[in-house]
Structures are given as structure tokens and as C-alpha cells.
Amino acid sequence: MESNNNNLNLDMEKDQETTFDYSKRAQWLRAAVLGANDGLVSTASLMMGIGAVKQDVRIMLLTGFAGLVAGACSMAIGEFISVYSQYDIEVAQMKRESGGETKKEKLPSPTQAAIASALAFTLGAIVPLLAAAFVKEYKVRIGVIVAAVTLALVMFGWLGAVLGKAPVVKSLVRVLIGGWLAMAITFGFTKLVGSHGL
Image 1 (cartoon, helix red, strand yellow):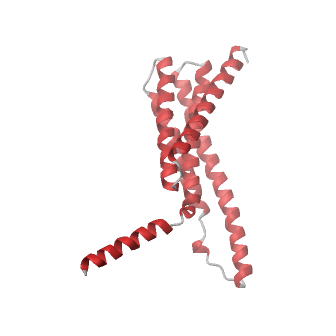
Image 2 (cartoon, rainbow, N blue to C red):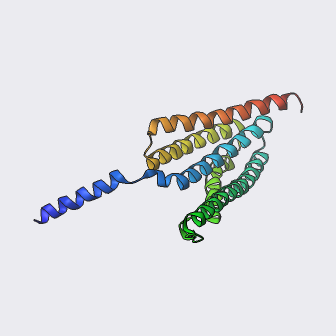
Image 3 (tube, rainbow, N blue to C red):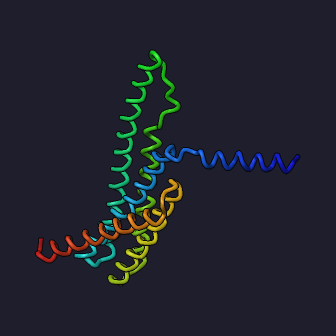
């Protein structure tokens, strides 16, 4: 009898796993992965771009830090406005449907979304900054940044795929190619512009 109960419990747990709506994770997952990936790629690209014309580690780190601060603020403000707009729409819809009553506690918090986006961006942006901080040799520093960013892109891509129950390889390839392209384009165009004395 006890083994039947255990089997029943296991079956119920499996049913809950298979019927879990992964789309409910979409909003926070999207914001977290987007924020971290954006912080990683944009900061690394800025650092690579400035590294294309200035080999000084201090300038590269200051550029990366400025990118971190500006990007985290931008992500927080953008997410706050986006979620607040959604919040207003949902509150208005609730009022129409229920004759003026609203259950705001079920709605997403714009402030929490803003903080989460800023933190996620910062987490991603720290990777290239730390990678470059301790390497004086210019070419080695560029290589270390690319390697660290590649590793982080793989981790973020894998995490996003696993949490969202999406195909892992497809996610990894998409994230890697996007990150590499951003760094290469920024490096190349900045080198081109810098070589013409602008």
C-alpha cells in the first residue's frame, strides 16, 4: 500500500512538472537574461572599441565602467517605464471588468523590475571589466576579454535555454554569434574611424 502511495506521489510530481506553464517565467527570465546579456555584450563591445584605438588599460576600464553605469541606468529606466505602462493597462482592464475593483498585488512591480534589470545588466558588465582589470599586456587583455565574454555568453545562453525549456544548442549559437558580432563590429568600425584621425 505504501509503495502505491509513493508511486502516486511520484506520478503527481511528474504531472506537475509536465503541466507547468513555462511561459509564466517569460517576463522575469526575459528581463534577467536580456539585462545580463546586454551588460556583457555592450560593455565588452565598448571596451573592445576603445581598445581598438587606445591600448591603455586605464582608459579601457574607465570606458567599461561608464558603460556599466549608463547601461544599468538605461535598463532600469526602460524596464520601469515598460512595466509601469503594462501595469496601468492591466489596472484599467481590471477596473473595466470588475466594476472598479483591482487586485494590484497580482501585478508586476515596476520598481522590482527596474532593480532586477539594473542588477542583471551590472552582473553581465562586470565580466569584461574583471577580465581586463588585471592584464597589462594589450593583446593578451583583448584575448582575455573575448575568452571571458565567450564563456559568460555560453553560461547565459545555457541558463536561458534551461530555465525556459528551449533548445540549448540553438540558444547557445544565437547568443554566441550575436556577442561575437557586436564585439567584432565595434572593434572594426572604431579602428577604421580611429585610423582616419577622427
